[in-house]
Length: 221
Ligand code: CA
Image (cartoon, rainbow, N blue to C red; front, side):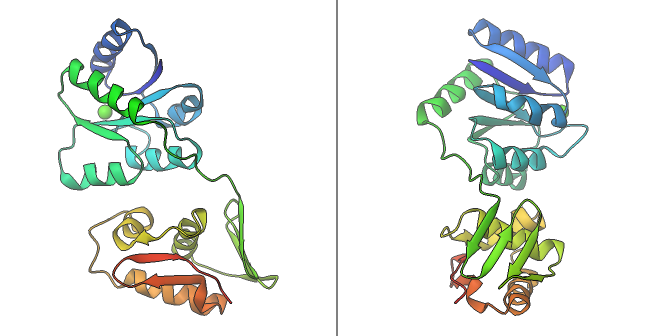
């Protein structure tokens, strides 16, 4: 299997690379997040260190998941529950906390591969519901042909729901992806943003509230 090793620590990367090669894998290595985004398309597995010099590893993971369903294990020195939680929420298939034994890594990789691939991410750039048109690429929203001005966060929230229409996204999940903090659950900010989206579009049904569960893209009629 072609494995992309995203690790900026040379010593660790070379030790891991050797171990992977010994198990018959072909290793592509980079220590940079920007490179990782470019290389991920051509591999069958990704091992991702969260502490990278040019981008937060979790941001990289999210960006990667928008375009790729490649099996991925997060390798982290961070033991905090929050980082691990966010890693898994952001699309990691599993995680390992450094230091770990190579046999452990191989077993986890095998298990992830055996579990099969996750559904491919949506590639639609434009999502339409009723007379609301959400252009995810251009970050533009129109209602009945009229442009609606949203703040960055309002758009991010709407885009997150629009990327998977019909899927309910939990409050924590939204706070994690849009606000970058899943434990900001006491924050009223999310409620305010939802209210703003409904008011600005004039389509209260666009964001549907599922009490105690979360939100999903609704029908705006
Ligand atoms: Ca590192």
